[in-house]
Amino acid sequence: MTESTKAKRYGVVSSADQAALSGLEFVQGLVNGVLPLNSMARTLGYDIVEASPGKVVVAATPTDELLNPAGTVHGGFAATLLDSCMGLAVWSATEKGFGSTTLEFKISFVRPITPATGPVRAEGTVLAVGRRVGTAEGRLTDASGRLLVHATTTCLIFER
Image (cartoon, rainbow, N blue to C red; front, side, top):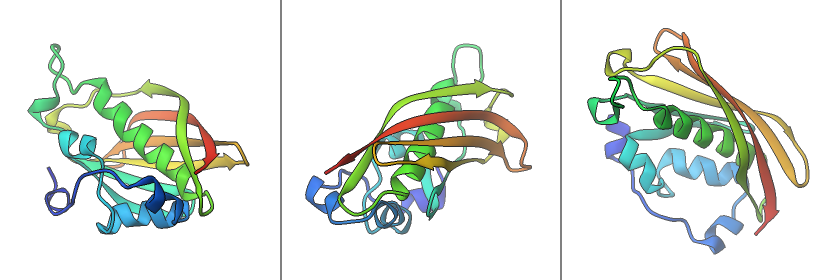
């Protein structure tokens, strides 16, 4: 778990509070700790570390607690990091009173992840955002910038 994750709060942001913020304000609130991260962030030890319009970065360090029976980090770890950064990237591009949720995503594993991989960074970038649908791509890289996993998503945009 990163030092910044230890200092974060976890919980749920009320629907009313979500509706009062633009998507970017919401995601920036997660980054700066004004809003709580979800409990999955605590469970997997990740943090949302950057947010700008259409781009969100999530960081984590894989541990022995995340291994599958083959001795590599379970693919659900990478999937969660990428789903989070891509979905939040789309959300960051929405106006006040709107939200988004994942409709589908595709993931491709390029290299295995182990605790020896060290810190990883998942970067989600918007490809297109319309009134009802947004798409984004994500890249999970190691500290050297080597690609580990990549993905794409389609998100539903809805009025709160």
